Image 1 (cartoon, one colour):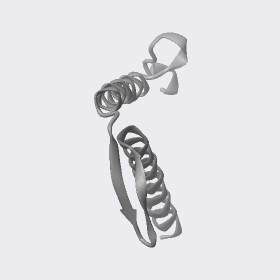
Image 2: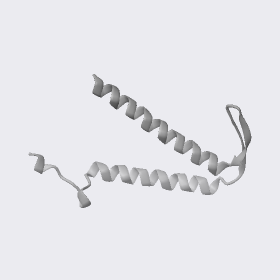
Image 3: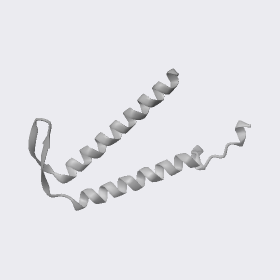
Image 4: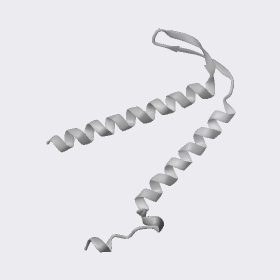
Length: 83
């Protein structure tokens, strides 16, 4: 029965292709937002205070969100496996 699983081209499943498409759309949207927001902006975070181009702030925030999301998913998967 395992042979009945349908896969797209290159051995990727349809779900994998959808995730790749979604990631590409998010990346294109993020790139467009970065290109349109190049002005410098004040940045205050914890004890740090300064100024940085808005695109750097956006890129760092997106990267931090991705890392925190993956970390949260990893923690949930680990807890589920322990039960």
